[in-house]
Length: 315
Image (cartoon, rainbow, N blue to C red; front, side):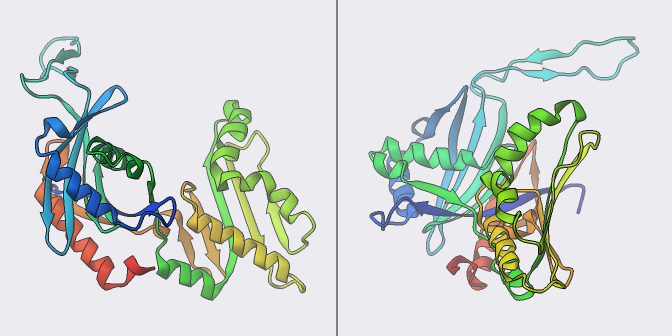
């Protein structure tokens, strides 16, 4: 990668409505809202202690609507460091933003096409896009619609087919733990984040199945906790165990929150959390701590067309 470029991740998400009553695509609502919210002032919303601002939007026929949203702490100063000098010591100071401006915390460029979205976050979480869309819909009168959709991850069908065709040999879940905090982490992190509650039931689920080897949490003196579920196909009568481990793998693949897992097939191929969800890394022209919006929009469009041509949007 050239030193002049910044690498960013393009993420595919799909707008999912809470029920079948909502038949109009998200894009339609977003485009209608932006014809009304025709100034930046109208597209500025409170987001906790911060504000988010719809800087730009552009509708492209047969593609969708591109948006650029930035977040910042209103009128908050930033820390500054002096140039190197012969002095023995120096202090960090603060500098207020120029008049009529704010120091940006981060921004996100994205495309809404039908119910498909391609996101390019820079220094912000992707939920900024969801919250911005909800705010613009609510502001123009689509209040029910604004709270009736979520942005869901969609699994890479090639990876899913690989797991189904080769079978699941093992699933491993890892987390690095500090010894002093392990009791707290077992209670707060492992049980709340890994498999969204599946860990609470794994022992009960597999305790009567001799074909499943469940390696529980390591002793406290071990700084790394590794949980692995494996299936031994050499043993006879393991059909139930195999179905259970495959169901667990399927839940991991389609879960909306869990990350940090590795699934191994019987041929030895490994699929990680990062490979499951549709995404692509791209190199973009930098602009301060962000990137050039037109370059990002162009790469977003290319990725969208690639997914469309490969049938990924239809799965």
